[in-house]
Length: 180
Length: 334
Image (cartoon, rainbow over all chains, first blue to last red; front, side):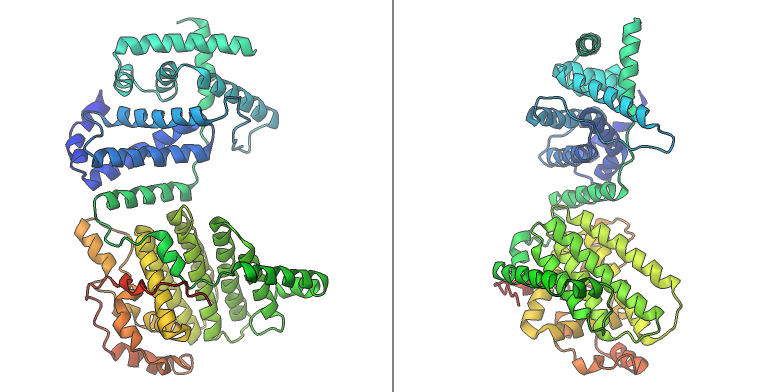
């Protein structure tokens, strides 16, 4: 896959704490990590915090000789995921209120409300998923990563990732049925 | 693929709508990231603990006992002088009610308890000082050095409060934006070519340089603010004002070899920020500055500038990391 090939030359520069390489990683992936954070947490503030924390941890990992050994993107998603999971654990385990919504001129108030409710419902269901299933589902269906990359992000074989996605979708279905 | 699977995926797609990010926040996150990266790389040489230098700043913040007095003042204003306080909000420097306006502002700032609010208020006050100057210019009134210095003081105060918040770079970016806006407004106005306007332009340019350089490295701004506080304590506020004036007038001739440009050269990276002259590098020159040079600058601008530019100002390359001046201790509040 092209992303994986592109990153191969990058790793040694990152390990040498080459600042221009590190900055390029930030430029390339901060937006994706923001989206990932927003989708799972439903708050712009939290999503920005997710970006800041993920990349701060990334810096410290590189500095202490850790950091990605082969691929950058899956590594960053893993770090972001760990931070988000911490947030889930800290949060009150009740359903959250409606998330921020940024209306466009064409939005009808009732559509906004319905969309918001549905989004929050699905976000709450995702939150209730076992961690592995959530990660496998979100990376695949929301972030659009390939299964090979997800396998790298999760440190699991591709077959296990596919199984987790399938089980994840089934769990979502069950939970939505209960809610509806 | 099963129907129900598609249905679930469609529901998941609803999470696809991501609101647009706040550009300031994006920039701030990146700047913080770069700053942390440089720190980890060992490139940041100035390591002043935020709290330690902050305590030494000469910021005009009221103490608790002062707060009691301000509460009493507010009550008296509300009961007896409420109308004056409201009316004073539109007053301009030189107006009878202007001191009431600044008093109300001091009270407003004095009552703020968290750094974020303090910063917001201070930035708002800085903008008010700008508006006053702008209105005076529009009305063809005389703008004196005192007005310009009041603007600068409010501006510096906003910087000081900004650096004390949790997100100093984010706050500096807000200051930068406001400064750009002020510059735009100034450029829209009629260019009268009168000395104070040139002077104001120089001040704005200098402050813009300070803010730009500080966004790259807030620790250096911390060091600079600390230096100013110590300088003011040692030589008095008037001397600090003279020092400012000296820098404003000499900046164009003194931009070589400062800390900031050296750092960026070492990194081998391009920067959009132009070279900036840090005040603490000029310590020796500034302590010798003759205040008489700055009197009546508006009346005899050219000769004043000529004189200054001919002066010995070639010490920009001394590599002295001047923040060391800030070991005076104490909180220097007045």
